[in-house]
Structures are given as C-alpha cells and as structure tokens.
Image 1 (cartoon, one colour):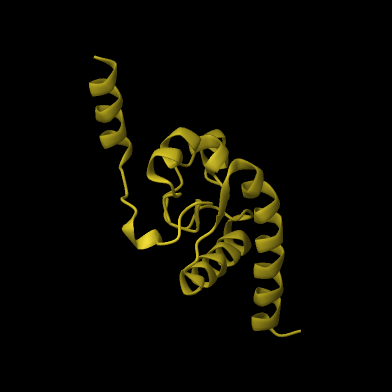
Image 2 (cartoon, one colour; image 1 turned 45 degrees about the vertical axis):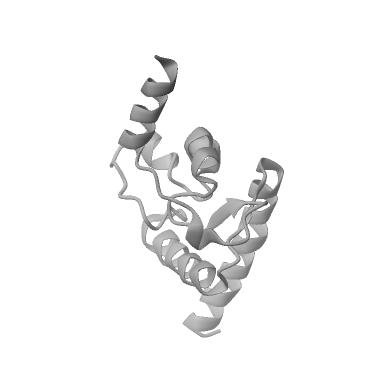
Length: 121
C-alpha cells in the first residue's frame, strides 16, 4: 500500500474516532471540508512523528501531562474556552449549530482570562 493510501486510510479512521468523541460534546467537524482534510493530514503526520495526533496548531509544552491535553480532539481539556468561541483552536471542530465557521472569532487564553475577570467583578 502506498504512503498516500495509508494516509487516507488513517485520516478516515481518525474522522470516525473523533466523531464518536466530539458528537456527544455538541461538536462536529467544520463544514469547511478543505480545512478538515488538511488538518487531518497534519494530524496523521504528527501521529507518525510524535506517536499521537496532537493538535496541529499548538506547540507541545514538552511536559507529558500537558502534551496529552493537546491530543486531538482536545475539547474535553479546553471545553470552557471552546464553548465560548464555538470552535476549537485550529477550527477542525465547531459547535453543531455553526454553519459559517469563518464568522467565528479566535479568543486567546489571555483574552479569555480578561473576559472572565471582567464578568466576575
């Protein structure tokens, strides 16, 4: 089997696995299929290189416990943040009610902290 065929097969397996994880959490794959395909391919390459399908848009801290929080889908570890943005960091997953992911804003962890402070005061 060619490398391309193995990559495609693994992308399909990750899609199946991830769907079972994110669906009960109220998320789905982004409707942007080009983005989804690209990000799944990045995850397959990361999995081959580092042993797990880490989030393709986050740098690994280098501490195993913290690194494991970035294994895709990382929604369970970042749920509060992602629920506010209605998407994950890289945009692979969006809330089920999202039809146009391009309209969603990215909110940094620092911005989120600031927002939380302002609402708690």
